[in-house]
Length: 279
Ligand SMILES: C[S@@+](CC[C@H](N)C(=O)[O-])C[C@H]1O[C@@H](n2cnc3c(N)ncnc32)[C@H](O)[C@@H]1O
Image 1 (tube, protein in one colour):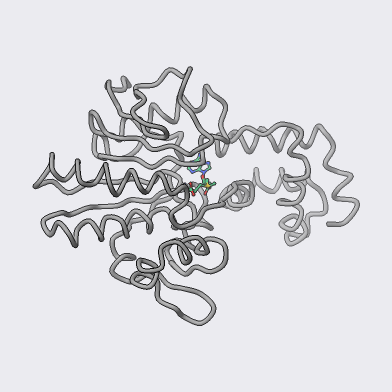
Image 2 (cartoon, rainbow, N blue to C red):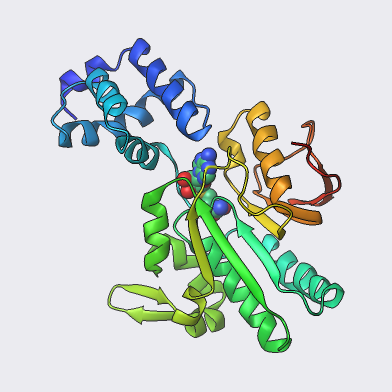
């Protein structure tokens, strides 16, 4: 980044960026995120030949398509296959068998609400496929959504390498070899698994299109970016998408305690919708 750009991000301009981040994503960042904002935005500002952070704000105001670029730059998309193994233990050993027993004829409807580059939805699909092989009548639908078009494009591609597959490759070799196809430097998700997933661009601050539809929602490692009052808004939307007694799974650094929501605690990281969301 050139020095002039750095100097231009004074606390006034930083504040403007922090409110734009909040306006477009719901993510709350404090002044301590100055380095992150600079590091993420300065290559874009350089590429556009704008020369200053304030000019970039003007540019965004007059080019609505830039808002999606901005969202792609300010979101953090860290994820991996089988992230947080105890969640997958619960899903495979507890949720899937019990749900199938209670709903022998219904398709299981699953939503991953911040699916990033796809590792989470493909992990869900692998677990469901394994369950289906042992329970042939079982059917399922999986929707993944995110606010970043960049990670959704990666999820569409379904090609992975490096950290996102490392733990999967070493700790779950049988499934890895079964569902990941080596292709040069990366591994491609098996086309049968890829075909199970639908992907959408969706902001969690908007209500879901499908009401009282999903049996389980994975909403992991995204609530940490929001203020408590915003988490309540997001959870009200999630609740609208879930059936009564539907299950919500959150990330390991997240908790719903002391928030006003329609969810009750079931197990660590696992909640259940126990009242309808009004509105
Ligand atoms: C750290 S990743 C979590 C990925 C995955 N759920 C996991 O746990 O591995 C957080 C994701 O939330 C998305 N995100 C942030 N704000 C969002 C919003 N308002 N609506 C939808 N997705 C959002 C980001 O784009 C990012 O891909």
